[in-house]
Structure formats: C-alpha cells, structure tokens
Length: 364
Ligand code: M6R
Image (cartoon, rainbow, N blue to C red; front, side, top):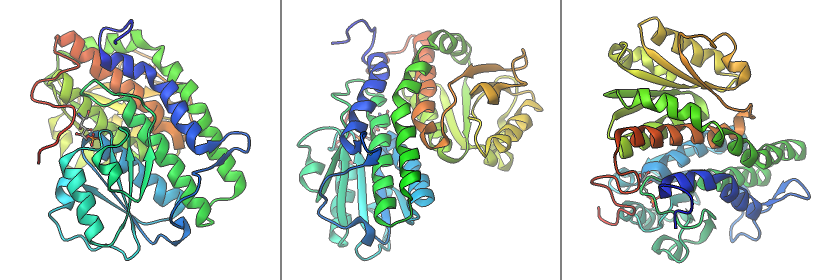
C-alpha cells in the first residue's frame, strides 16, 4: 500500500535511506569497515575488463559505476545500452566480466544482451531487484538489491540500491587488484555508511523542491548539468522529469554546453545545475556562469560551501548536506527525483502510471 503517501513514487523516494542501508549492510562488514561480498565463483583480481550493460535508469547506474571502476579499481570499463550492445560486434576481452543491471531482471533487451555476452565467452553477473527473475536464473553471479518491490513506473529506490551494490563491487574489485589500501577502503566504507543519513537530510527539504517545481512546471524545456559522477545523475534527472511530467528535458555534461546546447538558452529554459563542492566544482560553476550570462534561469543544487556567493535573487538554490564526492550520486539522486515528482504534481499528470510506459519492458 501507499501508506501515508499519495503515490507509490513518493513513498519509494522516502524509503531510500532504509533500503540503501539494508542493501549496503549485505555487502559491508561494518565492524571491520570492510567490504565483504562472501564467496564468489571467480577471482576478481583476474578480471581484465568489465562491460556494464543496462537500459534506462539502470544504465545511468552503470554509467556512475564506470567512473568508480576506473578511478578506484583501475579497471577499464565498457559501457553499453543493451539494445545497442546486442546488435553491434563488440570486441570483448577474454575472461572479461559482463555485468548486467536491471531492477526487474526481465527487460527483453538486457536479457538478450546477457545471452549475447555469454555466447562471447564472458563471465556473467547481474544486479537485480526481483528474486528468481530470468536474468538471475541465467547468470553465474547474482548481486541483489534489497529495495523491496518497486511499484512506481519511474524507478527511484531501485536506482540508489543499484548504486550501492555497484559501489561495493567496485571496492571489492579494487581490493582484489590491490589498488586500494586498507585505510582507503575504510574511508570509502565510512562514506557509504554515512549516505543513508545524508539522504534523509535531503528528504527534509521538501518545501524547497515544491517551490522550485512550481516554476519548472511552466517550462517547455529543461536542462540538467553535472560533471563526473554527477553527470549520469543529470541524465537521470532529465529522464525522470520526461517520464512523469512530459516536459522535454535533457541532461548534459556541463562542459559540453558550449559545444551546442548553449544555443538553446534564454529566460524560458530552466537549467538545473548539480554542483557539489568537489574538485570539479569550479569547472561546473564556470559552465553555469556561461548560462547565467545568456539570461538562463538557474537552479543551483549544492552544499553550504558551494552555495556561498549565490544566496541572492539571481538564481534559485537548493542546499544539500556536504558529502564525500564518492557518494554524491546517491545523495544528488534525491533532489532530481523530488523535482520530477513535484513538477509532475504541479502539472497534474499520473505519476505512478505515466502514459505510454510499462514498469517492465519485456518486448524489444
Ligand atoms: O527493470 P530494468 O531496470 O531493466 O528497467 C530498465 C528501464 O526500462 C527502466 O529503468 C526505465 O527507464 C524506468 N522507467 C526509469 O524510470
């Protein structure tokens, strides 16, 4: 049931601190602050290359993981949309790991990609939310997300649980490959441990999201900008908004604005900027300045330090708690989900059953 919430989507958004903690708890030994995936049928230290494949929101989780795998585990990663992968002649590394990510475990394109990768001799692992799904049955290794049933067509809690499992897999791979000191492992685990409470804090900003969403609801087009691990979150923000509010939205790597999309900017195009105060904060902000200089309307989402100097009427701001950049995709998922939700509410669309969409896409 929806409990005290008007929609499953809102309920599922609010469940995230709990289900993320639950999921992390399955892969982390908190007493030692270390990752523990249990016994695996393969040796992660021997993996030459990882291929990540998924559709939709699950694909954006894979995209975040590419940044993590390469930075932390130093493993090269190929990233594919399932419907593209199955029809292209991907050159795959011998003994490579193909990791498919799916909430339902039934998405036709992802299942076909799994079979295709298997034919190419890949080791097959899946991250799925639904027990006993087709993909789980056909893989060598299954990593579960413990999000519980996700009813809303727009994926929310499954996404942040996928990110949680991926983060643990990346750390386990980094450990196996000896590219992670024990001290660093503890730091990363500590960051993950803090994620659920930071997400809870973000969820208390509901009024701010509602206010901003009332303006967004008037727009015809909206852009989302982010860099690094927050770039996939910008893409996810645009997808979420499109799905449930039917407003045209696009996510861009902030540095790409000047290569084309900046031509779209005028006072009618809101631009949502995800800019936690990290090492790339200044770069994102300078891209935001380029938009401001052309009369664009900005919604800046950042932490206290990142909002210094912007608390005036020139732009709208949403403040999130400060987080380590490693976990910022988990935290910054909350504002993009709530902005999509409240924008759809302001427009009066059917949030849980958006037009033309199905929860699980079992046709090609
Ligand atoms: O069940 P899956 O994770 O394989 O589904 C993949 C996509 O169909 C799904 O994420 C879709 O994009 C959602 N409606 C996004 O909110």
